[in-house]
Image (cartoon, rainbow, N blue to C red):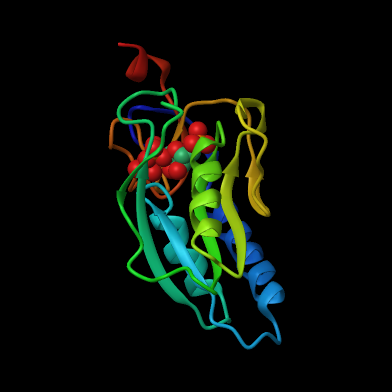
Length: 181
Ligand code: PRP
């Protein structure tokens, strides 16, 4: 285990099982519809989840990417998510599925929803790996979340602290001394 991880919160196996369920939920949602959803990874945190999720889906999809950041190297949301890189595709008339690693304050999701709907998307569906409802600052929720978690400082499977730990294959609780020094 990484020396800066205090304990494993979610193992690779636990995550894998929930990713399959999320993919099945999306397949069900688009079953029988003559549509190719535009599945969007909100970079960078969701990239690992996104890759596993789309590969577990049966529905034909198009993939796109958007880089949004609001935390920088801080553990508190700035409340003002910044779009660093926009979608390549148009959202106009599309069934957009937004893939997030975590919904925390909700600011990022609120901004993305307004943006994508404002561009004329036909539908907007949000799938998140993790949800921290106790941290919500704005009233918004994902349509599907794999795990509801307590307010712990977690990293791995895409989630970072100061841009590190994203490639750890499980989700672990970061040792307090790492982010309090
Ligand atoms: C994280 C995470 C979500 C967002 C959730 O992104 O990936 O997009 O924060 O937090 P919120 O609900 O409080 O808005 P971050 O800004 O850390 O960028 P990253 O994805 O590159 O790590």
